[in-house]
Amino acid sequence: MNFAGHVLVPLFILALIATARCELLTLGLVGSVVSGIGYYVYENYKCTYQECCTDEYIKPDLDKLEYMLTAKLYGQQIAHETIITALRGHLGSNNSPKALVMSFHGTPGTGKNYVAQMIATAFYKKGVESQYFHFFNGRNDFPLQQKVDEYKEDLYRIISKGLKQCEKSMFVFDEVDKMPENLMNVLVPFLDYYSYRKSSKSSESMIQNKAIFIFLSNTGSTQIVKHLTSLWEQGRKRDDTRLQDFEKLIADGAFNEKGGFHHSDAIQTNVIDHYVPFLPLEEVHVRKCLLRIFSERGVLPTKEMMEEALSHLTFGPEPHNLYSMAGCKRIEQKVAAIVYRKQSVPRTDN
Ligand SMILES: Nc1ncnc2c1ncn2[C@@H]1O[C@H](COP(=O)(O)OP(=O)(O)OP(=O)(O)O)[C@@H](O)[C@H]1O
Ligand SMILES: [Mg+2]
View (cartoon, rainbow, N blue to C red):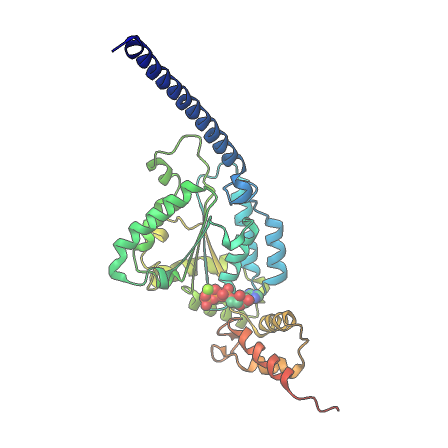
């Protein structure tokens, strides 16, 4: 091999390698700068495009809630006051030691789901669509008693994850009376004073507990109806009844009736802060519901139309028949049928 073969070729190869490494280094450097900027942009702007656990997306507006309850919820003065006071107290304290736990009880169609939705609307920019609003249905989500252990694990996981994702999460459990017995017990650590935090190794600075749990059920409603009827018989007006008239009745009723609350730790350990009675609706309230539904359809109902709609509802219990057995539930369809029939009657004036 001559001089070129011995010296120039290796030099040329070395030069090539050096250039390639330089370019790789440059590329690597550029890559990390770009990904750094990307990450910065993503972190700073992601909440513009997607929901985050920030004040922009979670801004509890209790005045708005109060307005909605006043304007749209009929005949539930006790529930209205109890819920607003409970929420104001919970949000007002800077380091609430415990999640707020409310349990709504009452006969069908009295507004339990309706109010839970209003609360979500007043709390989250995205209302019930918020990823921080978690809704479970006892009957559909936990149908089988024999799978209770599996459900317990799932539920524990979902709630821990939800709370890690966002402190200000809301969990609504509908039809608690249809949940397998014992399942509720898995919730107790989340509902109790600090106990979830102590065991979950969370940092000391996170001592607030802003989560809200709401349970909905028909348990205790027999007691509510009986008691309200007896107050009525004594001449006491509905508006003069107080929370204290019902609270203990409901807790005892719920504890003893079959279903999710049956002999439950949640009740025994007193982690439920407020038992909220939803009173059965009287004709006067159902009339208001009907008027609202007619007006949402742009119809001012005649006396006959109102009477026809009312005739589809059953009032009970005997002998006074004061209360609509299904409250204001499923009256939309009746109204729709009446409006449709009215509008499709051929006009005879020409
Ligand atoms: N107190 C009320 N004031 C005004 N509207 C009401 C009231 N209660 C019920 N409604 C109307 O009836 C509908 C059904 O009520 P909702 O689903 O809240 O009943 P519920 O109490 O959850 O009954 P259930 O025990 O059968 O689940 C609501 O969407 C609302 O339009
Ligand atoms: Mg309901």
